[in-house]
Image 1 (cartoon, rainbow, N blue to C red):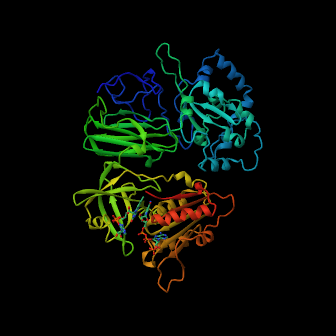
Image 2: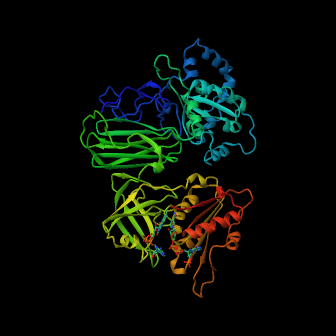
Image 3: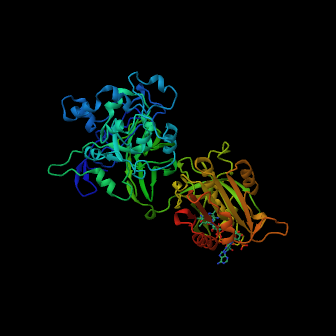
Length: 607
Ligand code: FAD
Ligand code: NAP
């Protein structure tokens, strides 16, 4: 397929393609023969950010090669230019600039010995503004850039605009940081930091602490990369990419690239979005068809090609978090040079709302089935080796089986293999196996068929769906879970994730509604967990208990809820999750609204 070297940009203008810089992470032995640019690579006006992962501690020898010409800094390097003179003023006297970057000392211990002799006294910090406080803030999940997790390409004009204390961007080695949230934590004082506001601070930084681990310290403040100017056709006005990107409500469109070595082909997806995880990308390779779907908020970006050459079954997926880069490393079957990645397939290189995409299925093998209660079983399915799929917390998938000649589909929510799986080594690696707690209804349509499957049989599993967002758990203090019957399933991963990953969490309370004691899923595990982790409490409520039952009984009610949902304080951040039979969930929602919980404080799991 012929891919033009000129193409239309989003506004209908023609732009020349800018050849992307070679990807830095693997030695480039061979590139696509089409003059180093790949036949299927998408056009783009600006090179997409390709940031190296931040080393845990940056030593002078670890520093990246000189950054691409960034407006201010390039000028500094050419004496006599306008920028050089203005920055030289900023850089003197050297004694003061020594303080400028002093705070970005790694917390790794050697800091004081490494501090230059000419460093002056640090400015006293307010209480609650220590290095530890800063680290805590960066791990809190707060949006420190104001860009809601997006990474953007910053023009020189845009950088200059952000030159105030409450809106201060600084460029270091071609990467732009919003340092406003850091101001009060900066031991050198706000004024010192402001000396580089809206400009390139690389040289100031280098004069003092080239080895400081600023990439790690400021990674949550990363706004994006300085944009290089595209070559525009004559007579065309340059358009500010940043203004354009900021103005848009949805995420900006990802792009991809590929490169090769003798034995590997690496496909790189630049999502232009922070907080991309391994569960953001789903990869399937079947015959010669290669498919990588990246989910970004409510949108889906698809790379879908028929590969030009054969590859081995297994591949690896790497994610550079906070930079939004995904690398899929394929192993060639033969060490030949690929001229192109392959031929585009349906919806290749599209970025469309997720609701407009069809469900994609792959066949998974049943590897075990275990009784949990008299009618509920733990099913373990194995993904094919040529699939990378991790179902995000709070999301479900669809299982598909042919029943009397028709493909029948029902939704199910994956769980962990046990409530303690995060606290111990999983029995089986959880990126290959998916577990489900499924109740078998004897008169049901789908579950009896599922129950008939033998170990080794196949069932199709779709891509994940659902509207639970993990950020709902950030900074949470009180988490309340209201589950009825198998409505417990989405609570399993939410509970595990919250107890393991949310430092602010003080309490997780589960109210679990069932008919009888025999119906309670994982009762002893829940009681053990409550015993082991004092933050967790569980209360069982039965609608049809035996006479021996001394616990709570009845149905969901305002009286039960108001007693159960005691928040720590009026201002504490609370989330209430609900799941069960539809009428249970609907009644529960109404009761919670009547109890004055806001919409943001309630999440109901539905299809
Ligand atoms: P159905 O044929 O749907 O019947 C279910 C029961 O209802 C049977 O007892 C049947 O006799 C009865 N019934 C059906 N129709 C009627 C009727 N008209 N009047 C009276 N009774 C009727 N389930 C799980 O076990 N685990 C999960 O993890 C899970 N996750 C889910 C996630 C989502 C997002 C949703 C929406 C549902 C989830 N479910 C889960 C439920 C699951 O999708 C199925 O609905 C369930 O397994 C029943 O399927 P079935 O075809 O066997 O039963
Ligand atoms: P179940 O055993 O029938 O019911 C569990 C408890 O809820 C019982 O105590 C039951 O009381 C009570 N209950 C039932 N209907 C109620 C109502 N209208 N009001 C108040 N309480 C009610 O539950 P199940 O068979 O496991 O079914 C679980 C449901 O959860 C299914 O409908 C499934 O689709 C849903 N689910 C949804 C998701 C999701 O959306 N993500 C995930 C998993 C499961 P009595 O039976 O004694 O009346």
